Every structure is written in structure tokens, then in C-alpha cells.
Image (tube, rainbow, N blue to C red; front, side, top):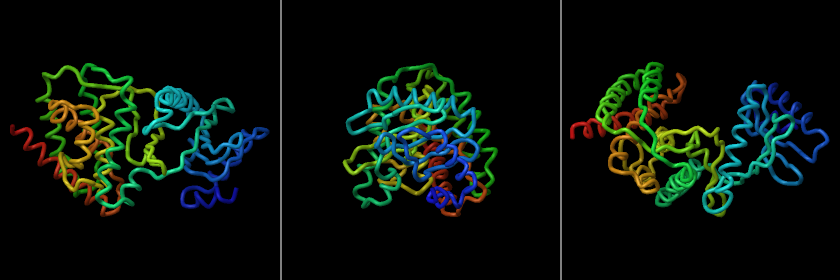
Amino acid sequence: MNALLENTAQADPAAAARAAGTLEELLAGLDAAPEEILRLVPGRRAVFAGHWLGRAVVFHLALAPEEVAGFRARHDEQTRVHGYMGDGPFRVPEPIRLIAGDRVAVTQAISGTPLLDALWQADKPDRPALQASGAGWLAAHAAPTLEDRPVNRGPWRKWAVAGQARQTHDRLKGIEARVLQKMHALSRRLRPVTTWRSALGHGDFHPNNLIRDADGVTWGIDLGASNRAPIYRDIARFLVHAARRGMLPSGQRRFGVDAGGLADFARAFALTEEELTGDLPFFLCHELLVRVEHPDMPGPRIRHTVDLSEAMFEDLRDLLRD
């Protein structure tokens, strides 16, 4: 188990050692072999690679009682989605089993490259097609539960306001305040719209929660519980996450994010003009504002977010002039 400590030396090696010992105790007597630690959230959960009945798996370990209910919910959600995304070009790993009083979730291990890393590694001409796989995955995931639901923009505006108020970077405070003003203006313009499309969403749909394997299959990981939300929320999460890191495969922006990626999602979901110029920009604003950069965020990330914010503001201003 020395590798466990090596992989978490920069986080909390003592907590890693405790988690490793707990997992070994819970798996004692079973045909299971935990190996290296993949992720640790001290006091909450840990993720290990390993083998179960001779099969490569991932072990998710709950380190706190309140995590167990979440494990059950995520297992149920992954079971639901695996029922229609167990094969084909867009998939989710198989949820194999909950054990040890649901403190340990065993899931299929996936070999491949996180999509954002794959985009950086790819030649520039190949990046747009790779990015489009994200839109394809999300459309396949949402399809069975997609339906119109009544609009409720109030909570999203409230969360955006709270996020913008927490911003600590002077370079972002001013431009984000102006984006927030445009978000409110856009919301007022959309008042006649009474429904928007929603689905049981991923919950944290960004490019590094997608894995591309050697066969070109796109796998979605880290699914949350079955929470219904407007489809534009997951689209915005993906596009803003990439733009914040300077990944713009098409080389063009629209509403601050990659114009080609926005077009990919528009095609995948057959977005109407009203959705493309109303609901989706509203959620792009929300995503920009609600996720606040850490005070110690490196300068390049702040520069990317400034560029994103300024471009988003300009396009919103032009949109609202029409």
C-alpha cells in the first residue's frame, strides 16, 4: 500500500493511510484487492483502483455516515443510466455492487484519457470532433427523460448573485458585475417564455468527467443523483469549464465560450432560436458567476476568465440591443 501514500503526499497522507486501512478491513475475506488511491476528500470519501473477482474496478469508500445515502443514490442513478448507455459510442461504467452496508461502491474501471486532456493532446484540426463527442454524450444521456417543464429562473439568478458577491479577484469583479446586469436584463426579456426543456442531468458535466478510450468510446463518470434540471445547465457547465482553461477548439467565441462547441450542443439537442439566444445564454451567465475562482488561482486562469467574461458581456449587449 505504499503507492497510496505516494499518490496523496501533496494532500493528506495520514488520511490516505487511514482510508486505505478502512477499505482493507471492509473488504477482508472477499475476492477484492484495492490498489492505488485515485482521489481523497478527507473525512468524506476516497476512491481506489483495484480488482474485484479478478476484474479491474474502482472502489468508492464512504468515510462519513452522511456519504452513504449519496452512494446509494449515485448507484441507483448509474444503474438507471447504464440500462440504456451500457454499449454504443456513449456509455457509463457498469455499477457492479454496493457492499459493507453501502459504504463501498464497486464500479467498472475505465481506461482512457479525460476529454479535456485529450483535447490538449490532439492536433488542432482534430479538436472540434473530439469536443463534439461531449455534446453527443449529453444528448444520449438526457434523451429518455427530456420534457418541457415550467420555467423558474429565480433560484438561478439568486445563486448567480451570491457567486458574484464572493468574487475576490479585482480583475473579475467589474466585468462579472456587468455580466450579472445583462443576466437580469435577459431574464426580464424572457418573461413571456413559460416552459423550458429539462431532464435528469449529469450534475457536474465538464470535459474531465468524460473519458475517451482507445476505441473512440466516450464514457461519462461521476454521475450524481437523479436531479431534474434545465438541459442548458449541463451544456453551460461544459462550455464554460473549457473556456475558463483556454480550450477553444474552433478558435471562435460566442457568448464567451467556444462557438463551435456551442453549435455542437445546439445540433445535438436541436435547440430552437429562442433557446439558443435566451435560455442557454442565461445559464452561461449563471455558470460563469456561480463558480468563483480561488483567491490563489494562477494568473493564466484569471486571464482566461477575464477574456471569457468580456466576450460574454459584449455578445449579451449586442443581443439585448436587438
